[in-house]
Length: 394
Image (cartoon, rainbow, N blue to C red; front, side, top):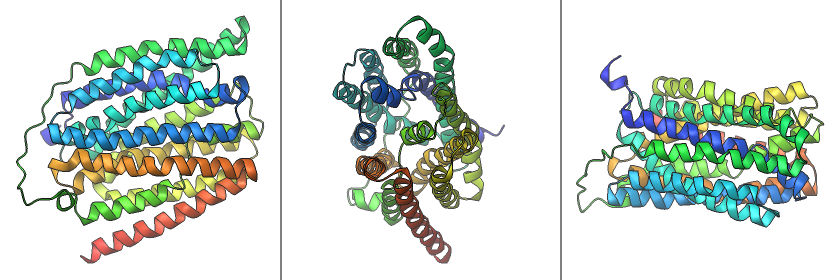
């Protein structure tokens, strides 16, 4: 394999760290909405509130850590600190006695994700070129999703045994305790990452705005619009429960979503290296609109399997290609800042987006909530198509 196509040791280690962290997290998060609604008796709108705050916290944290990692020219301290903070919070899910307790733990856990996320992505970008950047981001997301596949599988295998020997509340809490083990292993793994960021001399006349460039600003606006209509996987889980899918099957549906994400992540990244990032993202936005329509019409377990598969493909595109495209279009000295600003914009929109979807669902019905997301995603497609045409003319 040509040298410019190979993945560095750091990229490989970060992939392993992502795998272990997601193995831990995805033993908790697929069943957390059910734990909130069925055990702690929280309303569906509370699930939207918690998810919105969690995602906003993570993404806003990425904005700050990205800027700091650029300023300090160091990525590793943020990576180690972020993984450590997320890991130590995991046992506290098992101790939660009310939904505000879960909210606090989720909030702190997501701070850890925010601290590590942008620095880790910037390190991946720093050690790649245009020719293999999509592949590298795809590899990291693939490893991320490998953990996300195995996490729900562990839950699926353990939950029947646990529920047969203890009450439902204790069964959930036992899973949360077990999830602490891979979280600690992730911290140990990323400790062996070696800092390789080189100091970059920036001319004094180069402002942050100039370094980011007009393409980044326009793309940031488009992704912000799309983020206002996007919702988390929790609403797919709740939709599955709404149409009567067996509660023991739901972890498998979530596993199917993560397996789809796993299988699509690296091919999507490599494909975007060849056909273009913006075209690939436009396809992703259209897939999301179709998913929303499909969720409105789905009435059987078989149809829900398809929706979870498509949601995995959509997330593979969004999570892989957006980062690669941003890394392409900004100057290297502000790469962490740009990635962080993008995640911050998404985080700004995540809270109102999930609150709106949760409110429309509770006030009216799930179809109304999904219709809202369809309209927003189609607006984003139109805006992105305009950006593609402008680039061709220039």
